[in-house]
Image (tube, rainbow over all chains, first blue to last red; front, side, top):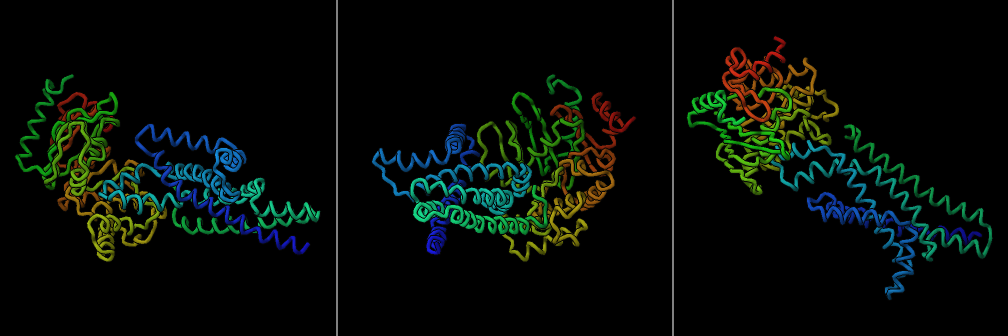
Length: 214
Length: 271
């Protein structure tokens, strides 16, 4: 039993790896994607809309199977962990782009106009005016999404990524004690998600203490 | 109706030519701005000499704000020409050159009806930012000048406050300081008191009166008729995108020539 607890705790590393890499992919690559949504070209905006709806309209589990089993049939054999990072990462790109789009929509046109009227350059307008407000607007939603991503990473157990749920399942199969071991697994998720929530709230309060968010 | 056939229009054009006498600082000729089928600005010409204060009055939706926004090219005119100081542009529907637009904007400062302060920056940072980014002033110099401008609008004590911690009247004065800190040659005021209650609006008008007395060249869209009458040198009456009457405030307010002007004034002045 003690060994089972240790093995499950050790699998936290894989869960975090999966969550953090998918989140980073989404946070970084969601930014250029949302530029498509802001484009003057209807075609680029259309590409954005189709991508976001297709990616988010299909269950993550189905995408996971497509990436792991489906691509293998085409001769593209990805390891389980890579399939999971790829799948959750692409979904995170679409989700973060939508979060950014909501944040940008919350910034009033007058902010841009004030910047233009002051002759601010494009770079300064983005860096000094838009980005700080965008960051404040999206930080709570992003934190909530990352907590969701942490929990969604458990899906990867189905294709055999040795994260918390997969390792717990293996141990329960050989030792029994399903109640204790899965409760323990649940506690690990809580131990990760509660501090994340608290930290994000503290950061948000600190960022917005002195002004009402939009 | 063809404006050129309108006797009032022809008369007022004569006034403009007379007072500009070739030394205008701002020269706008035949500006037209359409939004779809709607002619928001319908062949407006305007010339402003250094130190003049021009008020734009008229019913809501007449194009007063749009005309101001054409003067710093926040909106691009569909046709016409515009010169502010030594920066000139001709508009013919083709894409405008960014450098030309920036050259015009460098001469102008704008004060908005909804203030448009940057909410994540303190008052002094609001005023200092563009000085550093656009004029290349050092942080210390920008801050010193920002504090001086805040002092000028009576808000030195609020330098480190954020916009949300300031009243509407204070926010608008920060907005004025922010525009003034760029040393503009022309200040554009877009109904600066419309979002404020009358008593607070008076604070703003007091600041504007001082600017006018200091010789600041100003164009203001306003519903403050008494203010327009006493502070401006010239008043333009706008209706449906056109300037239908212009002249010295005493003439426009006391002896309006155009029937539409009389109707507008009698409605707003309760006569």
